[in-house]
Length: 72
Image (cartoon, rainbow, N blue to C red; front, side):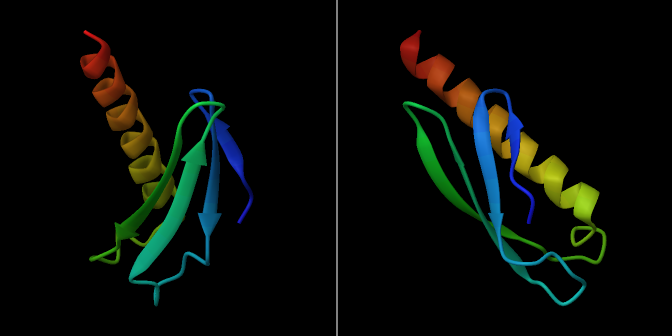
């Protein structure tokens, strides 16, 4: 998969996204924060490429919100 950047994180998807895929492993990291997640793909809509990317972006936004709440 093609790596991309989102909100300061370098995102890398490991493995293919296809109708036969049931889970996708992805990592997102920056200079101070390194995360690895496994995304479960249950429905055929979940397995569409743009929906996978949106779920990854939601995970990154949730991580940033968590880190902000820890600082406050």
